[in-house]
Length: 122
Image: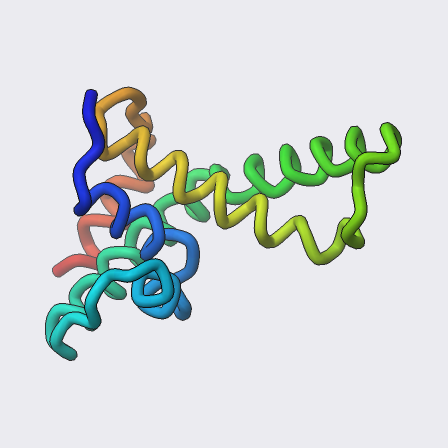
């Protein structure tokens, strides 16, 4: 599947709820109107909330720490581990979202969580 410009913009937006717009702008995407930026930020926050509620964020962080342990033990880590964990977690979350958006993976949500999620949208 070929990527689109919108895929790339969404990848940058997903790196951070608070700084996603700044990252997209830094990478050459134009600044959207305030209404569009607010809607995008809400969508990104909702996706991150889903990832947190389903344990995906915790698994991503743990995996990032394991990867950094390997790099540290191999003497391939030039930056302090504490500085790189958030970078790898943000990358992992954005990658997972990209895989979801492209239909390559899906998330199974238990019924109780789905009910809570639905109630919060009302």
